[in-house]
Structure formats: C-alpha cells, structure tokens
Amino acid sequence: MARWRLALVFLVLGTMVVLLSPWADAPSPSSVPAVVQPSEVKVVQEPEEAKEASKLTIEVALEEQEFRALTNLNDDFTFRHPDIEVELRRIPPERAYEAYWRSSELEEAADVMLFLNEWVAEFASSGYLLPVDAKALGEQFEALSGSLRWNEYLWGVPRDMDPYVLVWNLDLLHAWLGAEADFPLSEEQWAAAAEASAAAGQREEEQENAAYAYWLAIDGEDPLALLAWLESYAQLRSDELWEQGAGAWTGTVRGEAMGLLEERRENVRFGRDFRESIAALRDGNTLAAVMPYSEAKEFVARHDSNGADGKFRAAIDHHFWNLPYVWPRGSSFVISSRTEAEAAANVWIADMTGEQSQMLRMEELDKLPVIRSLYDADRRLSDLLPGRKGQAFPNKAPLLYGPETVETLERFGDLWSRFSGGELSLEGWLEEWRRETEG
Image (cartoon, rainbow, N blue to C red; front, top):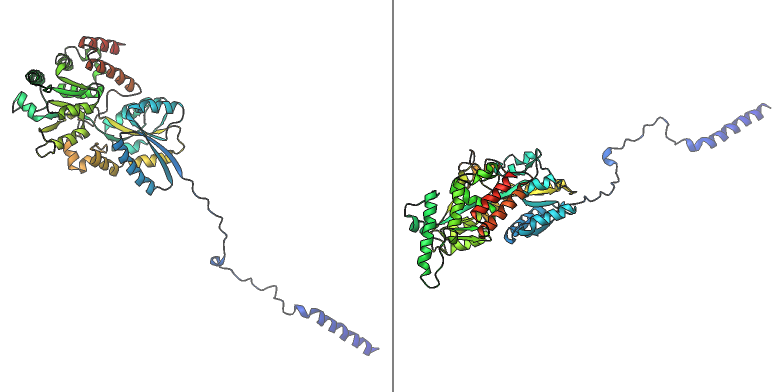
C-alpha cells in the first residue's frame, strides 16, 4: 500500500512539470520596459493647408506715364510679397472724383484709391474711408497732412506733391522790363509787363502772320492756377481768402491783380489746361506761364543755355513758396471702409509711399517727395526748400480744409472759369463773391 501511494505522488509531480514547462522562459513580471527615445518616435504630420493670399484692388487717377511708373513699382512689390495679389486699375483723372463717389455709394469701391488731398475729408465724413495710423505720418509736412485730418483722425497717406510755379522767358523779361529786372515782380512791374506785351502785340500785328504777345499764360479752368498766380503777385497766402469774406478783393493787392487781368485780358493766354500754358511759353512770345513744378523742371532743362530747344532762356520762380502755405497739389492713398484686406492695404501703401518710391518718382517724374528727412539728405531738395523747418511752405497746414473744401473750390473754380472766358466781369466777380461769403 505504501508503494502505491509513493507511485501516485510521483505521477502527480510529473504531470505538473509537463503542464508548467511552457512558462519557464516567460519574462519576470518585475522586468523594466525598454525606454524609447523621443527622436525615435515617428509623428504623423497632418498636411498643412496652403495660406490664402490677400487680394487687393487698387484704383488710381493717373496719366499713362505715371501709371506705367506705378505699375513697375507694383510688379516689384508683388514679387517680394507673393502672399498679396494686386489688381491695379487706372481711372482717367478728369473722371476720377465722380467715379470714386459712384463706386463708394454702391459699396463697390476698390480697397485702395488715390485721391487728391482736398477730396479726402469729404469721403471720410461720409463713412467711405478707414483712418490710417497717425504714427506713419510723423515725417509728413503739415501742408499735406493738414488737409487729411478730420474728426481727430488722419484718413490718407501722402504720396507726392507738385505745386505750381511761374516759369519766365528771361529774354522777354529783360527786353520788356530792362536788363536788371528779376522776379518776383512788383505790382508796378506786372503792370509794365502787361503794357509792354500790348505794345509788342501791336507791332507784330503789322507783320503778316505775326504771333500775338502775352504777358501771362494760365489755366483758365483750374482755380489753384489762379491762386498760385495771386500768391506770386501779392506775396500773400491764398487759403485765407475765405476767412476775409467780402473784404478779400475790394481795395486789396489781390483786387488790383484781378483788375489787371480784366484790363489786359487781350494779352493773357487763358488756356483750358496747363499744357496750353506750356505751349504758349514754348512759342517764345509769352513772358510767364503758370505750370506744375514737375513740368517746369523739364521745360527749363530744355531752355537753358545748353538746352536742345533753347530758343530762349527760361527760369523757374517759386519765391512765393516762402509763404506759410501754398497749395501743394498733393495726392494721397486712402483705404475704403468696405475692404476685407486692411492689413494688406497698409503694407502696399507703405511700400508705395516709402523713401525708395519717393526718390524714384522724383527721378522719373520730378514729383516732389513728402517725407521731411529726404530734404535733409539730398542737396537738390534742401536747396529747393531751404526754409522747410521754419514758418514757410510746406510746414503750415491749410486754413481751408474739411469736408466742404471740394464744394468751396468748385464754386471758386466756376467763378474763375467764367471770368477767364469773358462771361463774368470783375464787378460780377465781386458781387458773386460777396453773396458766396456772406451766405
């Protein structure tokens, strides 16, 4: 019986060995897992969505030559900013104001537009523009930025300026007024020049196919051309006329100037564009012409002692720029309030109004820069505006500014157009001005 039990024990133990033998090589529960280094972990990247480009529409009221120059700058910009797509469109300058109003009223305005400075406050007050960062205009002259202010904000970024000057035929000046004559002319010299042109015209009429003689050529449609000539004649800023009301003309130097225009109108070349004034001066029988600085610069270069068209010697007179304010004839970029790409618009405007762009426009088109520091760095500019840090132009803001400026200048322009065309006498001018300013 003992042997049987002993055999049973051995049988049970053998069975257990057979059953447990597959677990003999199993790892111990206390073994430490292998550490995986972060660099060995493969992270599956989700495909990155392509960044959507900002799209800008830009409308500018420019002549063809200026538009081509801006197109070149824009091409360079888009190459450097592939994330901004720009559609650049040109509007004929003579239709720009009405086109901008229509598109703004229909909420179809371009993201960025190029305005004359005098338009900006009117559009801003109507809710059609976004204000710009005032810090970006710290380098701008007050003559430019002053007209862009409304309701304590700035609504445009100046691009350039092109104020009027007088260009003189020096040969005629010395022939009519003597070898010592120089500008600016006195009131007596202006009267003498007008009389001399009439006398010269009478002599030339005796000759077959003789040309007429003029003492002045001026755009009879542009009120700023008249204001520039009045500034030169009277040596007084012209934006204060509306503050003086009915007394602006009666018994004043400006009144005498208008009287001279009426008395000697037969020997004034009243054009319908400043290009007609340039053409009159080019003919060689006109004493002085009112024209933009950029045009004057090119004209005088052709009529100095070495000029290709040097039939006579010509010179620029901008002495009236010593006044506190003259009309800068500036333009500015503005941003439509309907834009969905304000950030991109600001980037584009900053590039188009930066120092490099300013200097390129001066080199190519003779348009004057609007950044103050450039006049310190460039001798040509510092000589042109030696008083730029004082009380002279372009350091003072205009006295006439705000949403009503466009309408005010339009009414003044209508007076000037009718006067220059012979439809309105000086007496009629004074009467309409009185009604205008006295309400």
